[in-house]
Each structure stands twice: as C-alpha cells, then as structure tokens.
Amino acid sequence: MASAYNENYYDITPQIQTLAQLCTQAGAIDPALYGQHQVKRGLRDLDGKGVLTGLTEIAEIQSSREENGVSVPCEGRLFYRGISINDIVRGFLRENRYGFEETAYLLLFGDLPTREQLEEFQELLAGYRTLPTNFVRDIIMKAPSADMMNTLARSVLTLYSYDPQADVVTTENVLRQCLQLIALFPLLAVYGYQAYSHYHEGNSLIIHSPEPGLSTAENLLRILRPNGAYTPLEAQILDLALVLHAEHGGGNNSTFTMRVVTSSMTDTYSAVAASLASLKGPRHGGANIKVVRMFEDMKRSIADWSDEEEVTRYLNALLAGEAFDRSGLIYGMGHAVYSLSDPRADIFRSFVEKLSQEKGLVEEYKLYSLVERLAPKVIGEKRRIYKGVSANIDFYSGFVYHMLGLPLELYTPIFAVSRIAGWSAHRLEEIVGGGKIIRPAYKSVMPRRDYVPMDQR
Image (tube, rainbow, N blue to C red; front, top):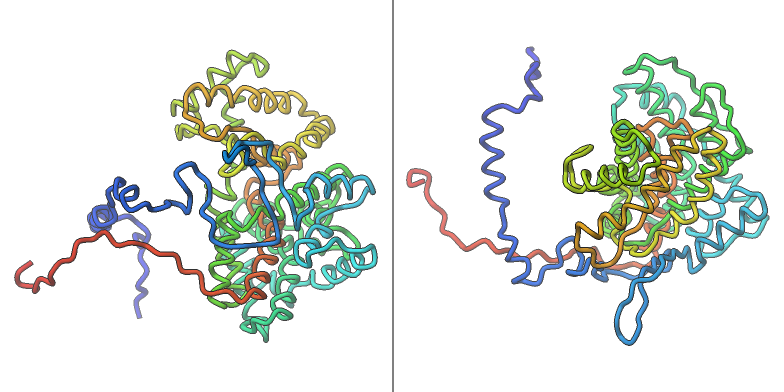
C-alpha cells in the first residue's frame, strides 16, 4: 500500500495560499468595533490594566498605589503568599541555603516550611526524581524535536500513559502528580536537549542521573554538563533564577491557561501541557532569547560598547525598525504590569554582576547596564508611555543563562522548570475552590445571512 506522505507534504502550495487569503478575509474584524462594543482586548482595559477575572492567595503583583482616588505608578513589588520576594530571597541567602524548594513549598501549601518540613519535602522530591523504566530511551530519544518546549510537552503527555490514576482529579492525587512533575521537569528538559544535541548536532551523548542530596539547581547543572561540575556561585544564581520565575500571579498567560484548562476538570498532564504551549510563545517565555540575540547583534554593530552616543543611536535604530529583527522593540524593556521597576530584575542585578566577574564578562555586563539606563529615555522620546518603562527580568535572565553556558534551546524550558511550581499551586487552588468552568463572552459582529443553495453561489 502506497504511503500518503510525499516530499511536498509540508509545502505551502498555491492552493493553501488561496485558502489562507479566505481565512484572512473571514477573520478581519474592524478594529473600531472593539471600542464600540467596549471589548477589553487581551482582557485588558485601555490603560493596559488587566480585567479582574478571579481571586487568588498565591501571589500578588504591585505596580501602582491609590493616591486621592487616582492610580499612581510605584516601584514594583512581588509577593508569594503575602511575603515579599525580597524578604524570601534575603532569608535563604542569609542562611546560605538554596531557595527554590522552600519557595515551591510556600506556593503549594501557603506557609514557609519548618526545617523538618523542608527536609521531608526535599526528600519527597528526590524520591520522585525518577523516570519510568526506559522512558529516556523509548520516549525522549525517539524523534527528538528541535524545540525543547515541544519535547517537554510530549514527555508530559506521555507520562499520562504511565499513571494508573491519571484522570483522578482529587486534591491528593493532583498534588502527587504536581510534585512528581516539579521533580521531573529538570530531567525532561535536559535529557530532551541532549537527545536533540546528539542526533541533530552530532555531539556526544552523556546522560547523568540526578543526585538525591542536591538541590534542583545543582541537579540541573550536574545532569547538563558532561563533567557534572559547577561552582557554588553558578548554582546559587541559577537557584535564584528559579525562585524569581516560580510564580507571577494568576493573570500571566500560561498561569491563566492553567486556570482555564483546570476549570474544565481535565487531567493534570493535559493542563500542564497546555501551559507549556502558552509559555513557549515568544510574547511570553521566549522573551529572554530575544534579549540575548539582540545584544549579540548590538555587540557586532557597535564599535565602542562604552560610547553612550553610539549605543543610543543603535537603540533608536531598534525603535525605528532598522536594527536586529526590525520589530521596533527593545527587548527586555517594559512589562505588561510593572511600570517603574520589576523587583525581580532589581534582585537579579547584583548577582549578575558577581557572575560576570567570575566569568570574565564584566564589559558585557557594563553594556547591559548602559542599555538599561539609556533605553527608558530613548523609548520615552519616541513612544507614548502610559505607565513607565524599565528593565524586566528577561533583560538579565538570558545574560545569566549565557554566562552559565546554557544552550539557547533550554532558556524557556528552564523557565518551565521554575514555573511548574506556580502552575501547580494555581491548579490546586482552582480545584479546591470548586469554581465554575471559565467561559468569557465573545460578541458576534457578523450580520445574519441566508443560506444560499449550491447552484446559486
């Protein structure tokens, strides 16, 4: 029997191009209608503020304060379960501990763990950090994808087949599934990359097993690097990145996706795969890759990285759509919620400088600092800014991953390794809360028409 597949199967044919034009015509809604019907596009008000669609106790983002009945931009603040992220970071760093596991416990269970509770939680995660027999060989190594987020999603969906209680949506069972995924995400991400690197790039394939006594950050570096070696500062700053990315309120795209899909009472693996699909998008989790590539182009285009005039000219060229990818954007600057500052970027900054000194990349760090200082002024001169603009965490996280020697393909999966903690907390909150299925309204603006018989068309 002949195969239906042919070498032109994935080509954009003239027929597809014609049909695509019909799609474009059918999907072209007059932009004026959104204002006429008071539609909050993207679930945002005209000033960019998110439409209130739910309640949560997991995280809070503060970017403005009320003064005499008027909303005034303020320095950004982030709270996990009511505790300032600044205090959380200071707390575990002061005691020279890793913080991601403590943060995951806080997000899931609502309170900071005691020493005994944290040790038991770490042991629980270590016990779950084991993939099913032959999973790496039979699933991850087969048909490796060039995009690790797709590999990660496929692995998560395949784990459904190994779980005898996959569709049981009780708090206890969902918690067990979430803890297993929090433990397994570093393995799924790194092993997926190593399979791609071996089969597509021809690199040697070295698979390390995780060490039970190591933190999530330490294990990630250990299983990724052929020699399994890392410095204390490398592990500390990667752990810090995981803490800062672990949660960001219910309104970000991937977490809202988790809430929406969970409200249908589907299984955990499907809900997590949906969130991964959201995070993959360049408007969400892929932003730090754009920052790194923008700076690579900047370094090639600018002769003197310390020349403010030359750097300013490049930034103006970015805004004019004349440099890098010609999108008209300065990546890493500005945020959908924060205005004056992103607290995560503020925390990250001093540690980035330390790592740049260890890696001999101080000049690159100085360029990042210069762009962070100049970009808001350049943007303010060219664009209407309704809430201020500042560096966000993506501005520095890509540089950190670059200094850690992490491949670009893993930047967004590492975001997922962290954010699975927040997603899990929101899934559990949605289930425990017993809310209704989330179903926003869409207003049809298509005029009514009569059906036309075939011979009259």
